[in-house]
Length: 282
Image 1 (cartoon, rainbow, N blue to C red):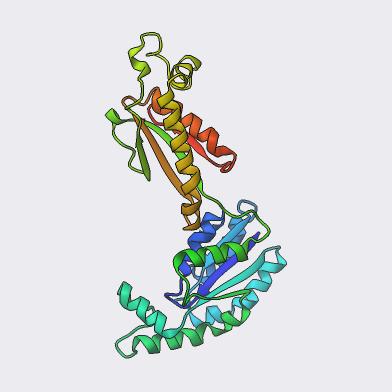
Image 2 (cartoon, rainbow, N blue to C red):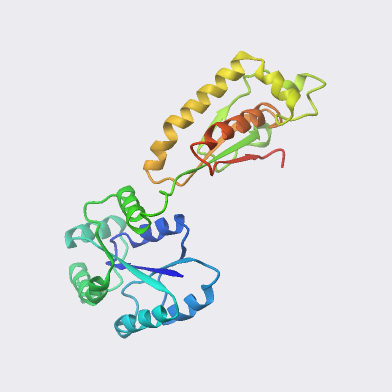
């Protein structure tokens, strides 16, 4: 098992780092009491290949001090460990806390925010010195931090990409709530009005032949395909891991199904993980 400990200063981006690791296939647990770490790894060993655990200063100081011995014992059981430590300049952390208006875990009536950050920095310095990857997030935005972690943690693996989801639906049953893009194809010729085609769906050859014979259907497909191929990389660069494209016709049986199938096939060469779902057919 590979164990990744994500730690560092409050407000430096630990939650973003954990979310990125989760997208990369890690089993993630945030704010775990350190005393439970051996039991967690033992329980997940054999079931999970990659575990990521968020650790912060809310753990007792004596527990943080025993972390080195704990990691050595885990190593003897076959668990390899790496530590990611995130930090930022004090003035940046103060600004982030003022923007979010969240309390610092060490803040109190007797200590200012700046004093709480200084104390946290001192308490976590032993972890910072043990870190395999130390990242200053002062000048990084969310997307830059995600890309940095992806590149550093798994350089030997293929870059984690976006998974497009193509969903056909019928407008008379409502628009899918999780849709990022909705395309209305009710303007296209409708096989429903052909008595022989009505009981079939867009996955059946007679319906496909009917729709393929209309030039406007082909034009709609090409423009949707080109739109997605041109813009999916931009969403991928922004750190999106899932994007749902909803194709809707009246009943969700013919036109939307046909186009969703074709779009899925067209995207599959570049995005092998593409998922095609037909809401009304299921």
